[in-house]
Structures are given as structure tokens and as C-alpha cells.
Amino acid sequence: MITIACDKAGVEYVAKCCEYFKENGVEYRVALPEDGSAFWFDYVDGAKEVAHDVAEGKSKLGVLICGTGIGMSIAANKVKGVRASVCSDTFSAEMTRRHNNANVLCMGARVIGEEIMIRVLDAFMKAPFDGETEEGVRHLNRVNKIIALEEEF
Image: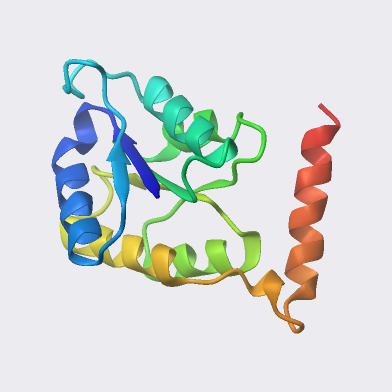
């Protein structure tokens, strides 16, 4: 399960992501206000809902889209257990999963075009966490340090 949310800047992009999910057989939930409109949905509220779904295990991954992706990533990263990354290219999207076991992808609708956005989403979705391999144990150790850092506060 993937939970996705946006503010008014990302509405069209969420629709494209949902098409991607449907085409790839991915179960998803769009987190929007009760009236279904993202126009007045504050990016912090969307980030909070997606981050909680991921942290509570309701969703394996989350996707957040606002103007730059920055505000949503800051808000989502306040939730214990969430590792949200802003990505604007496929290499960063792949590596944030492979090395950091990121579980929330944040993108900026005013930063990248729809075609690149789908490529970034695809790279994020398909990349495994390298920490689950013998060669990648150093990545697991680093992610565990991040988790331990959360426990300090």
C-alpha cells in the first residue's frame, strides 16, 4: 500500500502518480480532505497524514507532492520512523531507497515536469534497500544510527 497526498500545487501530479500505480498494480490511497479537494489542503496536513500511515505500518511507502517538495519533507521527517527525501532525479530517488531506506518520496511540482516525475517515482518504487544484503550491511548500520538518533529526542 502507498499513501499519496499533495497540496494545490501537486493535484495534477497526483493524478499522474495514480495512473502509474494502476498501470503497475500498486494498491494506493489518496489522502485528501473530506471534500476531496487539495486546493486548501495545507502541505503540513498532507505530510502528516502520509507520514503517520507509513510510521504506523498502514502503508509501506508514501509519496508527497507540493510546490518544491521541501516543506512536505520537513514536515514528514518530524514523524518518528519516517525517512522522507526530496528527489528531482532518478539517481537520487534510487539511492535514497538503496542507501537510506527512505520510505517517503517528496517531489516538487514546480521543480520537475510530469515525465521526469514518473521516472523519479518509478526509480523510488523499484529500488530495494541495500542494507538487506550482505554487501550492504554498512547501510543498515547507518539507518540504525538514524533510528537511534530519533530515540534521543
